[in-house]
Amino acid sequence: MNIDYPFHFNKQGRTAATPDADHIRDMVEQLLFTVPGERVNRPDFGSGLLQMVFEPNSPEVAAALQYLVQSNLNQYLGELIQLEDVDVISEDASLTVTVRYLIRRTQEQRTEQFRRTV
Image (cartoon, rainbow, N blue to C red; front, side):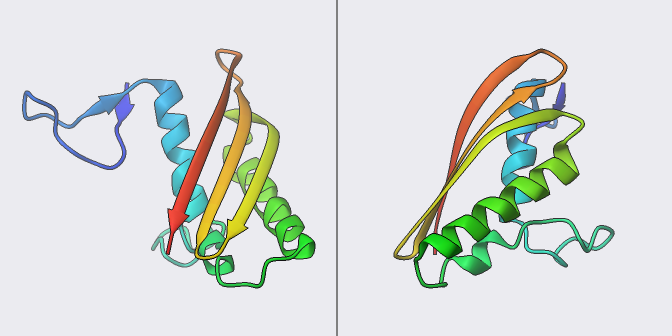
């Protein structure tokens, strides 16, 4: 078991835990919505995705976002997951990212959707 994100306590007053598959989903979310430079000991960690919410919508920006997300997921989580597809939709002040991946250890295929509204 792994520490659940966001950090909280369970009913017994202990640190809440989560299964591996949910922990990997939590790591994907943290990577997507962490701004580079935000982590003290890992200044290059993060995708900078939230900074792109205010960019004008265009096919070029969407392609850049997809490339950014794919490269960061492969760099930081490539040992845990096999990335299959990333879809990024920026609409007004909201950002939706759909990630489809295979968990290498269990061969479980997952599709997760993350949404942020600014």
